[in-house]
Structure formats: C-alpha cells, structure tokens
Image (cartoon, rainbow, N blue to C red; front, top):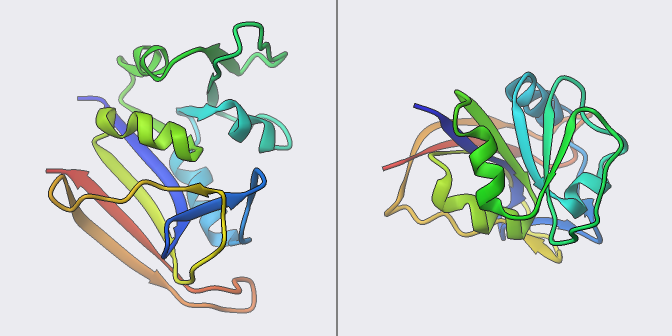
Amino acid sequence: MNTITLIAAASKNNALGKNNDLLWHLPDDFKRFKQLTSGHKIIMGRKTFESLPKPLPNRTHIIITRDKDYQVDFESCIVVHSIEAAIKLVENDETSFVIGGGEIYRQSEKFANRIELTRVHKAFEADTFFPEIDLNDWELIAEKYHPRDDKHIYDFTYLTYVRK
C-alpha cells in the first residue's frame, strides 16, 4: 500500500507561515523533515516551492500551480495543475509527502493516510494555516516532546497520526 503523508510544522493555532515564510527556526525539526522525506517525491504548491532557496536534494518535487505557463528549470521538478495530477504521479510509490502550503494540505488531506506534524507550543499570527485534524478520522499513534533549548526558541512535539 502506498503511503501519502502530510508533513508540517504548525503552531497550537495551526499557523504555518506568513508572507510565504516560516514563523520559527527549529533545526531538529528540519533534520527530521530531511530524514523522513529524502529519497521520496514531495508535493507542494508553487508558493511553497518558491519559498525554498533551491530544490531540496535527493527528492523529486511535484509543484502544483494553476498557471499553465509555469516552468521550472530543475531536473528534480515536475509541474502539474491539480492535486489529482500530483497524486497520480505518486500512486505507485511506497511513500510520498505533501509539504504545503495550507491550500495544498486542505486539498490533499482526503488522499493522505498519515500525518507527521510538529506541533509548536505557541500561537502565532499567520496568513497560512494547517487544516484542523479531525480525531474522528485520525488516530494519534506516536508523540515525542522536544523541550526548548539553546537552538530552539520554542518547545514542540512530534505527532504521528494515521487514518482510522
């Protein structure tokens, strides 16, 4: 069975970002993101792709945009025009990840069977949000707390959900 995982870091009010930028810097969360997504296809919206300094190494980027003329000059990138087209590209993969933004998470949730969420224990003002997790549909199967420290200004918890 193929696994489609929504992977995100969201605050306690589900904030993801503002002005196409992250709201925090959590080096251990970046390491976890890299470890989980390396070697897999990652699905994202155009704005999320454009917020990256460059394509992430060792991953195939599937970029969703409504702009029919949008092009990317990187071998590791594929441009599609709907969530359904993106899902079709990963249907034979064992594991793939949806990495944002807010609208792409909302559209892809019905296709996902796993969520890897880093819950940042603070509320933020934002313009992009992660969808509310409906516990009637999702079961929390793992939880690991990470305290605030000299490299992390906020404490956070890694949460893993699977579809019921």
